Length: 195
Image (cartoon, rainbow, N blue to C red):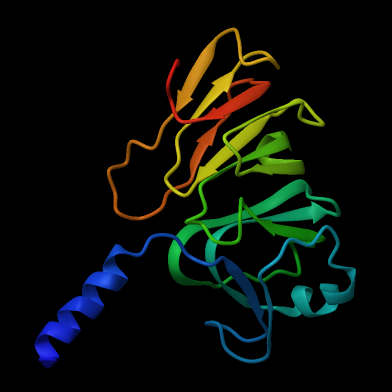
């Protein structure tokens, strides 16, 4: 195979890929250097890592992350993202008193999903919906984020009736996007038919 053809195919494959694997890494040094500890999962409490985090002077992240001042994803202190490429943030974490952290939605942002949150500012409990429809949430949703370039119809009532709002990705971008919505809803359907 001709090298130019191979290189063109390789570039095409990488440029068409959407979504990223989310991660958040705390660094002891400035400019994302020195000892580090990284996270790819959600942590309702960071007690074990608190001394390291409080001594950190920078962080690198990919995705959309929320850091909270209290355990169980309460009292948001700092949002990071969204970012589809590694981004280094020169932040001193000691004054933030980070007690919990999580990425928004699924770990892989290419996953078509609707993430529903109990509190404003994406606080409290989270339900990630990857099925075609959902209702009977264990709380009244206060916010939602769509990932995987997916569209959703948000219904006012628990039985897919009442006022409907189309939660649509209209960016036209080849990259995955998070769409944020805060209209009250009680049931959801994948796609935007009927809204």
